[in-house]
Length: 335
Image 1 (cartoon, rainbow, N blue to C red):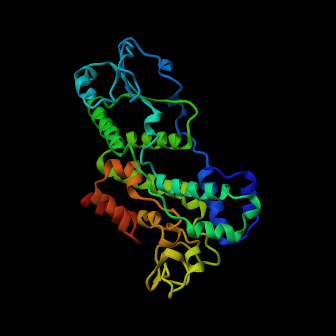
Image 2 (image 1 turned 180 degrees about the horizontal axis):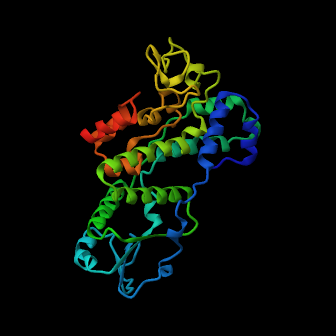
Image 3 (image 1 turned 90 degrees about the vertical axis):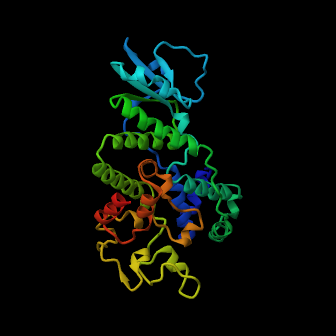
């Protein structure tokens, strides 16, 4: 994402809906991700202080077969973990080191959204500053064609997830390191999410589903919804201010945005518009109006949902609108 501070400061002086949407995109893309457990991140494999009888597993596709370090074993190859299974079971101490570059092209949370927001800002950056006006911004957004994101490592993500599940079955008490320097926001985010995935592995089914539900809702609240893409003003969302019933309006109401249920407002709303029951489907939902600008989140982009829920169970997280957490969790468990 490239948008100069000079142009961003100019856009902030415009008080219109489309300029505010650009400001939301910029703030969303530039938010710094703090690693929850920085002590797990090391700059290189040589930083690992290996005990005499300890085995170090390495997940690194770029690890050369010619590298021979006593006690270090690369498990990125397809059957490597199977071949080491008996050796691992009998070791007094086991650690795993993951090269963070393995996270780079995963279909991580909101990759689709980040990709499109970045493209829009880059289009504005390509314009001369004197040409950037509210009308220019509106035209840029309305002419934008959503870009498809090619996930080149979808299989690799599932492979790593399944590999970690198998390792946990063999040796649940392994230590974990992340190896990398100058981490990007995406890599930092992935480290946090992978820690959550490993924590969820240690939980029983009921606790695991509840934990996954809470963490995904928290993530949506803290890293997307707070950037105000819906841009409510006088109880009207962006879509309601720009469309009407006779031009394919959505949501089909005059106020309250998506929280208006056909004939009445959702009964689970607090006075400030927030949700009393933490409905994950409502949090995931993005209306078609702002969706056409590339704003949107998909269940398969969340590592926790992808790793532990089947496709049918993920559908329950997407389509159980206006339902409390307890009802949705029951549907997931029965899925």
